[in-house]
Length: 324
Image (tube, rainbow, N blue to C red; front, side, top):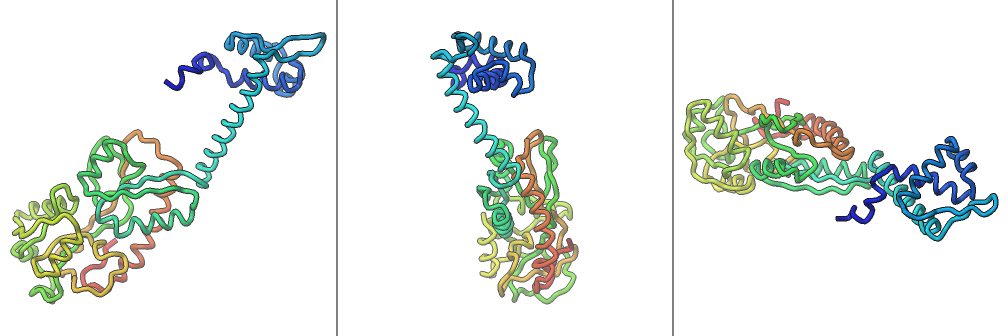
């Protein structure tokens, strides 16, 4: 155990004792040390006595009116400088973290978050170049497992979930839409009933996906069962399946990206869509968020507003605009 070698110094308030010792050794006088530190001389004497007892060796010897260091005192004096330098370096590092000049951020997001999380994280790092960041992308089930293990600093979910041991904070709208290929028979139909969508071949995300959970709940609330043709484990795979004419799917509007290029993917005009939903930050109850994590949350909320007001609302895709 690392602390076993310094156990004797952990028993008492050693740092205040070392402060008095260092000043006394440097000035060659306990009286002058007390004056410099603005403490009473009896208090300084008590601190030196306690430190001597802790070390177990005499630290000073008095010859005439002057105080000199013993061999043990000289070694301790040199050690004081090492300790104080280490603490000064640590404080400088912590000050840098407090002022966002440095720090670490490990962000874990659900798979759909890859369409905008890297951009927000990149903008954050540009503002705070001293921050070291890492981005993890997983499906909802894996994200929940990582959160339970407190493996990351922050988590970003495509939809909220109610758990007493988790704190959630809304970030921005994450509307769900019905995607199809542009030559689908329903492409030009307006106000399509959801029952009609339930009759179409449906492309479903894998078990553990947040998108699958939301789509399943949507069908269940309406007393309908989707005609699942394929289960796929990525949004890209579902988009390719749609483009191959294999069916339709319910996915996040963000699946098109923030600046969608011309594509044969369209959003069908289905009654009740876009379906309101929200991205949420999450972290375990009791977690002490770092200054970096809190700064990123504040930064992301500002960036998210710009994203929603800009790229998302101005999308040329029919039926794909956000209500947020």
